[in-house]
Amino acid sequence: MAKKTGGLSHFDGKGGAIMVDISAKETRSRTASAKGIISMNSLAFAAVRDGTVKKGDVLAVARIAGIMAAKKTPDLIPLCHSLAFDSCSVDFVLSEEFLRIEASCTVTLSGKTGAEMEALTGVSAALLTVYDMCKSADRAMVIGDIRLVEKSGGKSGHFTRD
Image (cartoon, rainbow, N blue to C red; front, side, top):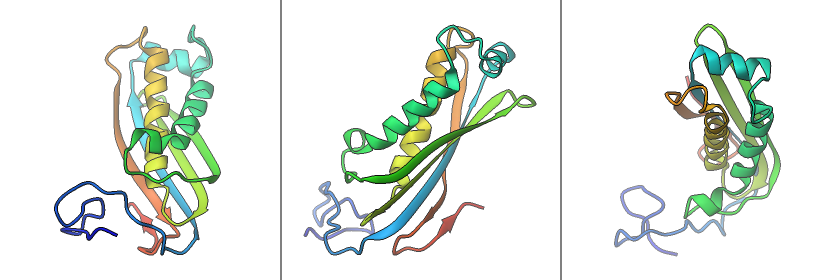
């Protein structure tokens, strides 16, 4: 196993990129949740809310995209381990007041490493799918505030964003 440097687990003693060796870690139940937001104009928001986007049911497609992306995280993020999920969910909250949609992704598994990257990837893909399906109504949509909101089950303990 390569020696870590500077407290960063994905670098060896010479600064080279490595995949973290998790072979000695204990299998635990782990959960990670992430959220993000897409803001849009009133036309795009109404089309999503009312189900009138010509490409189809935006939130249903975005939900599937988020779940699929979470499962493909190791194909997108080079040093992530492949994880077998027990569950993965993507949900949405629409805010008419702020003309935005908040996406959340929660991943649960039993494994030797956490699912933070998978939850973050799921949220990102869900929001990108909303953008793709609504861009004809608003090319100025803004995706942001993508963040880990909670994780549990690992050696580092429970994390909850304040």
